[in-house]
Length: 336
Image (tube, rainbow, N blue to C red; front, side, top):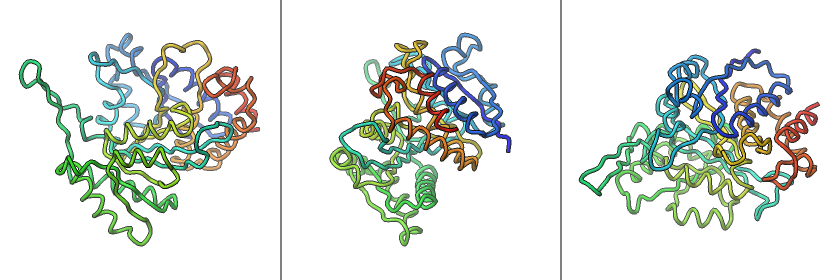
């Protein structure tokens, strides 16, 4: 079956890691037609926008994209491309699986989490203004529709993968209305799954402490937007960092899969970027379109390469002296 996938290389190391993911997916035998589209600072230079209309239209039309990292200026400049994509395409659910990987030594060896994050509301709604000079405010948005939608997605996602427990991280002891609404909606949805999925709630400060003490206590985490952003990066640190964690953003009519790390301009075009997060995101994409055999094949291949731990193969961030290309080629060889 032919799949048309929009490929958004992005900024910095984005073109390198997306090329690697494309090569691995093609080598797996899946029939993919890649539509390469501009996004990020390169798009700004040549198209006059960091998120050109034709890029959005193509993703909407084909319903599927694999995206590299993009650069977001701090404190000024253009808004986050990731946030804009999620809002414009209504990609309301972000999913980040976090699991321990063979050959990557960390404090824990039993991490197996799925983090589900509401993607379009909260403080990331971007509603900010200056009240008077020297005083600014940022509004946190929570709606019954949005909170119920992400809760339903999380329980459906957990049930489809035979997950046993969902824990909601919140701050409803302080933000009684917004986080309180998030909890009420989660509880209402949970009542329909009570016989299948265990449910728990935890104030986020305590939740983060418990997470770094013993991540095996958790299975699926459900969080509003800002909390989900922070906790998913924290959880990535439990398994080796953002370079070994994939990500996906789901809406009703399209999905965008992406490496969740930054664009790393300091190592761009040096050929040493770790492509694994982008390759893993490609595996999520393949599972999404029903190419489960190829997805499993790729996952087994990179697990084998990591377990083999040949320093000439692995990139420097995971203890090797290899290059993006050497790592990619090793995975492709393991596919054969």
